[in-house]
Image (cartoon, rainbow, N blue to C red; front, side):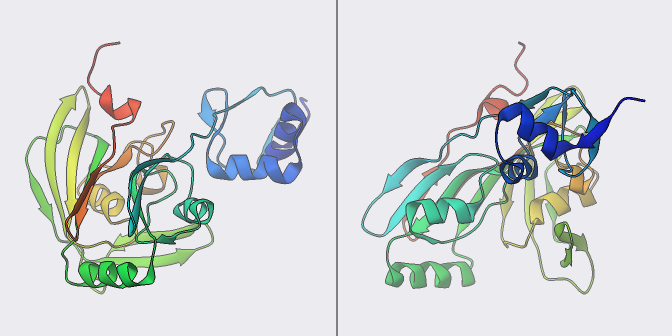
Length: 247
């Protein structure tokens, strides 16, 4: 019988890093074995397995002035890590694997103005998502969502007892059995886009938590955001810019 060991221990030996650092890489979602993402750091895996570790990209500044810094967030970094890195206050959040525009505040007065703008629904946010299925017609989803806390993190599910959640979905491109869609959200519930798209049978590719098929990342990108006279746009990552193009 082939000997096995915990995935993070084998990775630590291969990369010459500590067990803790190896576990953090797996938890971050950048470690692959046999072409598949390693999802559980403590999973038993065959000794001698060759791991591939994707390099983390660094966040870049899109714009900044005395009030705000707009950052192009790469996937696999948390919003909190970026806030700590820049030593600025988060104005909103993006999921770890979601890329795109992330806004940071430089002063308390501006932070308060942004909070009021969010409350008054005067912030426009547009995302791009690649989903399974042929999404051909525009769709407005207004299914309330209830967020449940689990050991593996938050999970949003449709529920009449949930909070109001509104997503406006517009098809952009169909390629084979997948589609790229534009999503404008009028509310900012936890995992709103991911849960809403799953609820109508078009899960985001890479979003296995919500029924999406496996991929290198969750195919969700925070494309544009406008508030208080500012408008920012994140350049499309390679996976989105090349969707539907022949290799």
